[in-house]
Image (tube, rainbow, N blue to C red):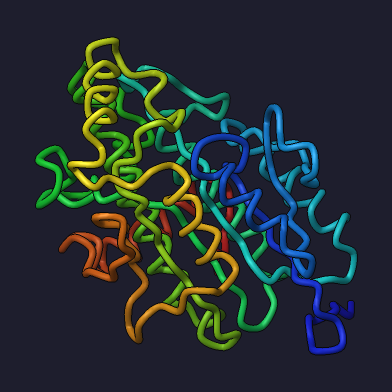
Length: 305
């Protein structure tokens, strides 16, 4: 089958995105959709900005991920994808939730569903495509004392299989670990033969602590109160606003920001986009390769790219 590439005679670019209905993702989606030469296809389970083309997507169901990927390909026809933004994320105050596929929900939504979507859409990514995956500096034990110091994908997927912590700290640790997985997924893609052959640009984006997003809605009352207090002193702490974090995500997705050579971790610090090294564990190839293979097995792919 012939697929249509974007060129000078056909300036329309296509971006596929998750997590664009609230918070910084909604800001980014609106910014992307405003570009007259860009077609944005958004995956969403609920309400959406009325001007954005949307297809149903429930990241708690791998079957829905497959249906969404098929729907995207049907909608695009022979067009290729110029940008893929994997932004959706959730966080719970514990690790008691399970998806219909049996996985712990934080790990399933933040990592596994996005891993499967990436694999399904990978053949349709154009030459020079941009892939932006939202991560978090909570993945780094140097920034977050509860950040993961080791990686066990099986335990993240099925925490009930062994003794495990409970309460808010367990939920926060699960979130931090899922964001480590997203960073390793970005590295795994960037180092793949296909990414090198098709000259993809891969970015793992940390928006930093962004008060005012829906990410904290499931936190216990005391934690939400603490976040509200942080929001009141945001000008002093120089935390980014939702608009600033969303604008940076849009700029990355649209290729307005070029990563420095050899860097893929973009971190919004003091309202400025920086390019630091991720955590030591995030730089380990054995952790990256192990996660890549384990994730493929969990989502039912026998031959991951």
